[in-house]
Image 1: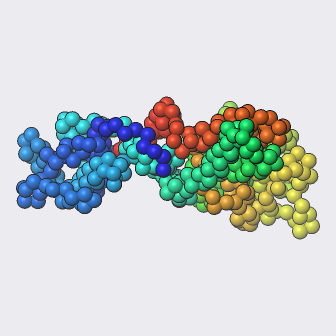
Image 2: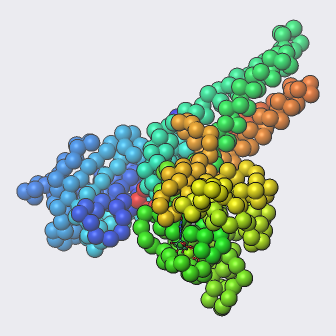
Length: 469
Ligand SMILES: Nc1nc2c(ncn2[C@@H]2O[C@H](COP(=O)(O)OP(=O)(O)OP(=O)(O)O)[C@@H](O)[C@H]2O)c(=O)[nH]1
Ligand SMILES: [Mg+2]
């Protein structure tokens, strides 16, 4: 847990914490020193008596306009006394009926009583400022709310529980240990204190670099799960792109006909592949277009191809690569690409080898194409598994992952500095020089958990939250 970054008393904030629109229950949340005093004038017991709110207990109340005494609603009100609350401050949660009109009135009455409207993410920001959670956990609150798949939610919950922070802590401790040893060596150099040997120093630095490097690599996976991936299905007309698209989303969404050039506009659907939110795009077959509409469709295919995080190239198993496909494979070099050899059901027992294999081996030797049939469903599970491997990477690990660009930036920089320190140590440079890099690495790890994050970074993080959280 970081030290409280701010100790002065903040003002009292309020917001509607439930989503806009009608619902069974709607909640207004207050946090700050005046949370209780500001809400009590609006509350009354069941038989009109003044309300006493015991901490951490739900209390049935009548909601009134304090100026007119008009009954607004009935509510269940919970008071959390500082520091045992979400924000670490006094918090009052008024759960009334989920009527936007009512909740708006309630909020206005509180604002009239001197409470301020909360900014996006301000409740969580206060939890961070009070030292109750670190910055990684604060980001996890936002990620949990915004998770697109069960896996994404699970990952965020793990991070909220402090799993990622706990993975960073031992790295930071080792780093501080190395710094302390080197500092001691410098301070006592004149007193014959044995200075760390280069070998011993390199070994210790390895204990920092190696887990940092694994953590840095975890971002590819964490990012896919949190942000999702765009997956474009491309290929020549009639290869079976739309048929495969329909198979993957498990319904007949795209039009399929035996006529080449069927798909014109791109067709998009969201689905989850092994917990990764995927935006699947079916595109028009690539060829010299016959007419205006098809030409425009093909232009859109090329745009989808350029923007996609992962490309699924669909080939016809019976056909050798044509010029368009050859160019495409050449252009795809170095980009995440998966090849499906579709229509495997049409391969003859006498000629079971797909005609395109030689061309693929020459142009994309690492592609490991998947043989399948959108018609019979053969190989579809292999295709899904291959897609999952591409989306999640092969580095299987139950370890918590980096999920935001901010986290990745800090870890990548810490790693770069730690590696520079190792190189300096290997080159026999003075410990003062090595220490400069190590201190920089430490600063990055502190920024990661928010122990020393500058205000503008904090503002950036919390401004991405929704109001009321
Ligand atoms: N035998 C066989 N036919 C298939 C298979 N996949 C698709 N087809 C047939 O191939 C034809 C074209 O399929 P589509 O899915 O429309 O092909 P497409 O690649 O989307 O074609 P365009 O939209 O024109 O670019 C249809 O008649 C499909 O039924 C397969 O695995 N085996
Ligand atoms: Mg199609």
